[in-house]
Image (cartoon, rainbow, N blue to C red; front, top):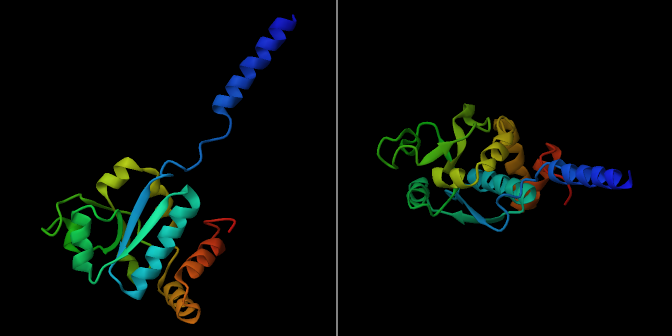
Length: 179
């Protein structure tokens, strides 16, 4: 009787140990994701928001890289020197009209500003390796309209700390918690 009870408790412990708490989004922990921007104040802010979301929710190291133009940024994407960029729906890089091989960059849902024409795009190899990042970044879809973007840019001009503004925005939207 005692043996059956102990075996039952042991089996329950194994089941709860195996099926207990769902896995956390630490699939990218220990890796570095490179986020590129074209150097504009708008893209600097948006890339900082995406970087902070990834950093806070996954524990992944983020490397922010600033380029002098959108063309330089897309060349870096072609060489897979960056994992995540912001693109417009009209860019040849996205439509496969010659700048980058088709399907090299995978568009995610637009954030909402500029009439939904601007959206994040991951390098296809990065999404294949870390598919959870798509779901994570898509949480920003529709969260940043033109008015919100202007408000955030004004906060950056007043505070001059992109990371603090990004964290505050993500906290207000309940996309990150803690410090």
